[in-house]
Image 1: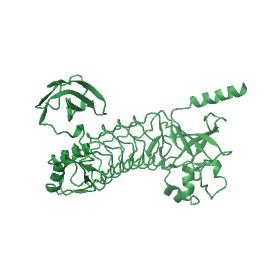
Image 2: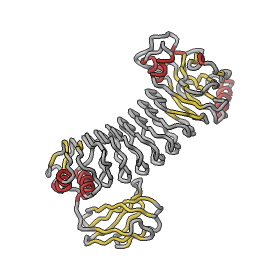
Image 3: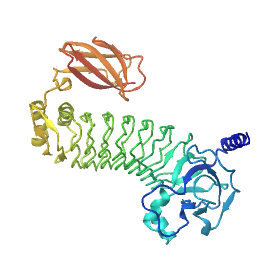
Length: 456
């Protein structure tokens, strides 16, 4: 009975923690194959990687159960860290799991940085493998608190056991750099929503979720308007497959390997404005599920497309739609070499492909003509001229065509079907919210015509 009340007391104590604390759980003795050699006592220590104008700050800790994370002890007395010599190292009474609370009483700007170079420079006894060992000790982020972060550059890189259960969001007001923030966080699931993060000031998302083997959370509400680099952002994130079509990527110039080997990713990106994109090398290389048309993209004049679609999942239909859209776009740049290894095309693709080769001086590396293996599906059917107006639409969308359409479907930017009905030349749009939509028209043979429109 005493044990029961003790546990309830500790649970209550943790439940009423102030909301301004940054709270993490660490395992001081993780199960790793290579142990550090510089000290026999590191299995009961943890290094707080705080940077910049962080002093003073206060630290408290308590031991917790390794499975339930239920407190086993009360919190330690608050430790005021105000000397440079005390900046990083916490020595616990014994190895185990500990909950750590960090508070910045003076509201100092905080930077959490795990990058090896800082530690090696400031603590010469730490080698790179030892730093990797320290990173593997970080087990949970339970609360971000109201600390004023300045950077998340490589913040939790190589924290292979880390997951985040925090229900609040970090204060990113002063953050511009998220380079490698969760790089190689193989266990990162992040079940609480990350979709409501305020990322408007961030300019660098390079490798943010690179090698995140378990991550697949919605991000479509992120305001990425000021981001300049998304290089390797979801590379080798095999489970990630969330809509991103709401993103304003108009300032991004570096898309290099953004979805490289992102095995499951297959979301429409047709609303993206990629005109500032310069480096698109291997953007979808090895993204074996990606099968979306990019024909509505306006490519920038300096864009690099080496290995752009190589070994991706783009089928004959969407390859045709992509090349046909570019061939009929007068703003498509000249003199481009595009990597399309592993893709196949049929006779309907020959014409737009030749337009790009002969009129735009493009070269194609790796695609293969195969009428047999590239039987046209519904999306490949070429209709007579279809006119849709007005666009943007208000109450109605009018369709004129000599084709015998029998039904229509309307999809929003997330790919959700929002309307369907028998075809008529005036389609009611007055109940749609403002935004971008896809109209799909089907004839009696279920052959499909697709067009984009805007509801204002």
